[in-house]
Amino acid sequence: MPQVDLSLYVMTPEYGAASQLEKIDMLDFANFVAINKFDRKGAADALRDVAKQVQRNQGDFSKRPEEMRCSARWPRASTTTESPRSTRRSCRG
Image (cartoon, rainbow, N blue to C red):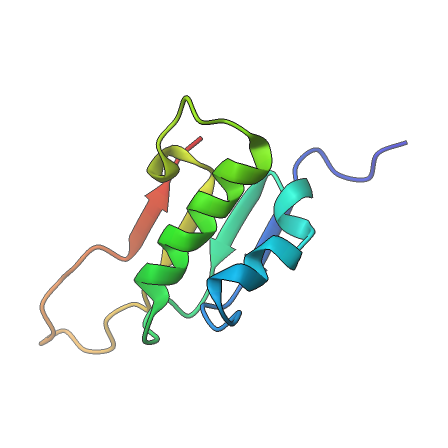
């Protein structure tokens, strides 16, 4: 009997080299992948690389990597004097 309907794999941008993504089995099984701590250096590259790896793992080359089920969040602005910006960047599947 299944315990959940959908699964979410949360990872940080510091997973190592892009070739390390091939070793993360959860990218094969998760319905959604989230990049946490998106304010860190290299996070945008991590989101792109993860989306490409998910695309390869699923063998779904009819979609662009940006359309794969992955998402990232920036931390919310801590003061009202900071300029507003989107707090979410996502790829949809």
